[in-house]
Amino acid sequence: MSSAHLTRLRKWFLAFPPADWAIQQVRELLIGALRQGPIPRHVAFVMDGNRRYARTHKIETVEGHHLGFEALARILEVCYKSGVKVVTIYAFSIENFKRSKYEVDALMDMAKVKLTQIAQHGELLHRYGAKIQILGQRELVRPDVLEAIDKAVEMCSGNDRAVLNVCFPYTSRNEITTAIRETVHEFSQPIRPTMKRPFSESHIARNIRTRQLSSVSEERLGFGEENAAEGDDTEASTYSAASTGEQAPSSQSSVSNSPSLKPSAFTSNFPDPESITGETLNSHMFTADAPPVDLLVRTSGVRRLSDFMLWQCHEHTSIVFLECLWPEFDLWQFLPVLVEWQWKQRNVEEAAKITADASKLGLKVQ
Ligand SMILES: CC(C)=CCC/C(C)=C/CC/C(C)=C/COP(=O)(O)OP(=O)(O)O
Image (cartoon, rainbow, N blue to C red; front, side, top):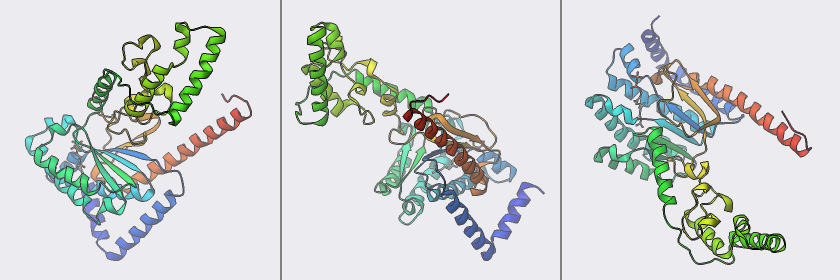
């Protein structure tokens, strides 16, 4: 039986109210079971296969994208109900501008209408306390579309339990380039000395460190350049306080992580590029506030990342390629992916626990 016939049969069966009710109950039960295990904090989707779905079902391309949106709404419900905090979707790649004007306009209009719809009071995003963030190159979007999506963002801005990141129009290369450009700009600005805050925690910590280091230096080293290289003098402390308080990325907590002056560069008054870390760049990514991606799913059998979430994927990110086309994607395809992720995650947590216990006993785990 062809997939078109199966879809029709499924629709016919689901049209019976008792069947619909029973399926809803099973869905709730399965999601409840999922919630008993670890849940990925951040899930990303490459929603691929809308046009192929439209072709195989002999419907308009735009209709394929509309069915793609319906699949998205279903899957967002599954994610938020299961406890996923951040969902990131590849809604429009910068490369997608190469498609026909008709299709680009249709996708833009769809974003305008659908984002407004799901942001309404009582609709999906409010039900799960999710806010929207638009990630990408805003300047490439038509003003009327921008106005509508900004309004949708505003409508959900009070929500703080979950996030929907809509990448639109986005590529990782553009995101990473923007982050590097902003970092270079930040590190090209002279550090402005600010008022000393004598009773701030960081100021006190620095002063203690400075005193400890200077007493060691006085005893052993004198006041040579080497001494300066190890500790902060009072002037450097003031500069560090300025950068820790105002210029360092929020995720950097230690004094040594913040943009600081090289002792040899005290006179240059610029932050030390050597203090740029992965955290510095991360704080300039569009997803700065989000945890790294734990699970990335791409549908339609295509096995590549297509310039999506290249920075956000880490050594434990599970990347899963599924054969089904995006409009077909639902809990039934997603469930095995989540169960496998939970199984792997338990192993990762178990291994971390063994390593921690071993290090407490002074042993080394291979
Ligand atoms: C909120 C919001 C804006 C939702 C967007 C809805 C949605 C599903 C957008 C996906 C658009 C897109 C380019 C999909 C890729 O499939 P494709 O067109 O490349 O299909 P193909 O791989 O079969 O050619």
